[in-house]
Amino acid sequence: MIDALRSNEADLYALVESFFKERFSTDNALITEAVRRMLAAGGKRLRPRMTLLAAAACSGDPVEHLQLAAYMELIHVATLIHDDVVDNAQTRRGVNATAVDFGNRVSVLAGDYLFAWIFKNVTAGYPHPVPNILSATLADICDGEVLQLRALGDLNHSLDDYVEVARKKTASLFAASAACGAIVGGGDRATIDALRSFGELFGIAFQMNDDLLDMTGDARTLGKPVGNDLTERKMTVPVVLALRDGGAAFRETFARFYAGTDNGALPAMVEAIDVAGGMRATRATLATFVERSKEALKPLPESAAKHQLNALADALIPRE
Ligand code: IPE
Ligand code: IPE
Ligand code: MG
Ligand code: MG
Image (cartoon, rainbow, N blue to C red; front, top):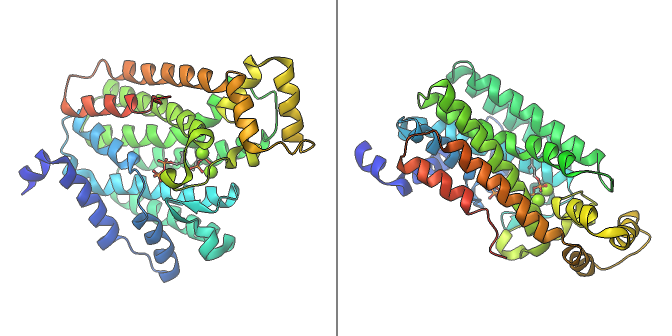
């Protein structure tokens, strides 16, 4: 049976899903329900995918690491539950955000509980440095989210500042997912570093693409609101680059919009960002991170898993 699973990637992910359905449970019925609901709503499952592919790229057997992969998704889900409270977002994965159905108070506590539940299991089941990497990642995510909040509406937020926030709030979990997969897969130090680096560069490009989708995507397809970043006055990458390249007139228009003194409609602002070159510059910058992520994988021997990691990175390039 294991051999059949090994040769069939779809079955591997079905096993991760059955872990969520059959084995995820906590002592608290309300928390279990809130988390299961978000797991059942779907999502791209990119972090567990990265863990399993990294393990396979090190010649490990991914079937042995399904549980660790599932923990990566659970960390992600807890951050999403909190993120929607912080960002005032009403929908997630095509359903109500947790706070809409359970309230902010239960959402904050459910996210906290889930983190604690994950760490209880990870510290009991995995040797150093896996628990250490995951703890550092969670610190990075909170750090990144707070840095982002402190930069709301700050028109002097530079591309370097942006990358630092994205590295912490988003890329750290991709880096940890890849690094931990490589560790349990038996990779040597150089391979673990290469995969960690791939995950980090992928994660920065991933956040850039997510920022772009908030302006160009469709709420139904994304399963979450669009335009919310501008409403929340976030310094997303298209905004940062439009301010860098768009000249004084754009800066003035945009300053008024973020100061709340000009109630310009969101579509007009998106259009202004596009005209100022924000979208084009985002696509170009994102492509450099995709290239760098693939560069990081180059020293690894060729394998189906490496090929799939490269394909995941290529898929981040927007089609226009
Ligand atoms: C959303 O992540 C949060 C960000 C880091 C931008 P995903 O886009 O991977 O969310 P799901 O898991 O598919 O719902
Ligand atoms: C998410 O960033 C970062 C997290 C740590 C969850 P966003 O706020 O851009 O993610 P979405 O767009 O709400 O999914
Ligand atoms: Mg958000
Ligand atoms: Mg977003």
